[in-house]
Structure formats: C-alpha cells, structure tokens
Image 1 (cartoon, rainbow, N blue to C red):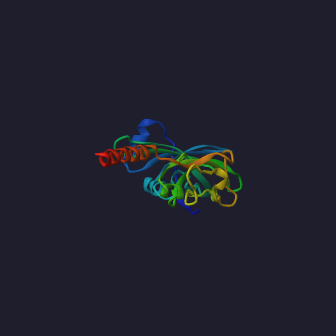
Image 2 (image 1 turned 135 degrees about the vertical axis):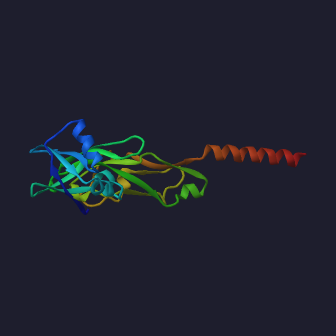
Image 3 (image 1 turned 90 degrees about the vertical axis):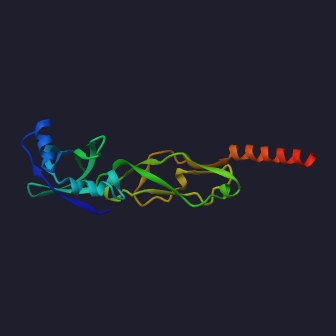
Length: 203
C-alpha cells in the first residue's frame, strides 16, 4: 500500500474558536497521537487528507505525517464531518508501526454468478465488512467472495477466502459469509402461475 505524505504544522491554540478560524482559512485541525506519542495538535491541508479517504483504501489509508522534520506513519482513527455539506471538520491520526499488527475492518465484495442462482436460488451476502488483523502495510483494499461455485443451499465461509499473505480474519473459519438459498418469492409466483395455467387448461 502506498502512503500519502502530509505536511503538518504544530498548532498552539486549541478549542472550537481557533478550530473554526482554521477551517475558515481552508485548513484542517487535527490531532496526532499513539503508542509512545504524546498528543500533538496539528494543522493539515484538507485536500491531502480527503483524496485518499475517497480512494480504494478509504479509512485504511496510510499517511506519512511530517512533524517538525520527523516522519511518522499514521492512519485515521476518527473524523468529524459537517452533516449537510460533508466537509471534513476534524481528524484524529493514530501513529502506527509497520512491524506491529493492528485490527481494522475491510469491505467485502461478492463477484461472479453462483451456480445456485442460475438454478433459481437467491444469493445472500451475510457481511459487507470483515474484521482483520495484519501489519498496516498489508491491509487489503477489499476482500473478494467468489460466489461462482456456490450451489443451492451451499455456503461460502471464512475458510474459503483467498487471503493475502499475513492477513487474518478475526472470525471463526466456518462463519458463513454468503449462501444461496431458495428464492421463496419466486417459488410462490411459480406455483401461482402453474395453478392459474392448470385452471385455464381445465376450462
């Protein structure tokens, strides 16, 4: 995973008033903290933060924060946005270590057309995100569920995932992620249609 460089300025004034003034100047107030790191109030360029957050890795994006000439690796721990405009108001940056695994959430995407769906079944995806543990640089943008081989009344479990090296999903191996079940609505409609056709034939 690539990292985005953030040029940060240490700010002395804290509180809502100074934060509002910073935002009025087109700047983003932030706090940087983590293991062995005392919290530091920072000022960032919001564009440098927003672009990666809207990219493939989203909240799992890695940032290289330059503070007083020193480089630190960080991830977004928390953020605040304006409810209407969705403008980024504040961000908390957590210091991370490339050699220490962390726990985060990764989105899940289903791909393919299941055999069971072709036969008239209905695909159900149980989870849209998965908890994973790995070093920060190994976090995948997404985890893919290939449903192609799932037949009627079969499941795709955690153990069936093709995981990148060093990535662990923090769920039981037999936890169901997707399944093909009977499409009861379609079955009822088919029965209704068959009954109507039978009545027509009798008439």
